[in-house]
Image (cartoon, rainbow, N blue to C red; front, side, top):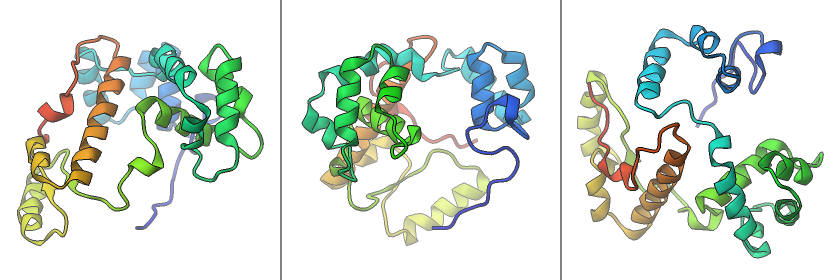
Length: 220
């Protein structure tokens, strides 16, 4: 693995204090209803994709659209289920459990659980894992397959070589998952469930369950 230095706008900054416009800042504009401002800050290719998704009723997507569903999930969880999300075993699971029972909104849950030791990013991640039904124990120890989302001409040529040289199965059609070993199948089913729940945040509820099983890679 290697990292790439971030340039331009810092991570998670708002438009008012951003040196440039990060993805977080653009989402902030959209959430405020400042669509024209948000579109003007997108690179042309991104803007075209966003407008197509918007026309299809799949954008913009905000966590607030699922707030009641997330709160319902949190309120139905046991202390042990919260603890299963706490990989560091530092008590943050218990704080989230208590907060979910003493707060009426998702922001209040996070505020009540927040301390100097537990950053908002960590708490948000745990809440999202809870909503999606994820736990560290459910994830495989290593990557079980490579799933192709999109490829251009160069990518297709690379895929041809990868089918002969890759150490992991290369998945271009979802049905191929059914021929893999159980860990791989369970991971894809987890991905599929997460996609089904994500679709509930679309502005228009048009996506049925199982969309991931029906989607092939984008290969123009």
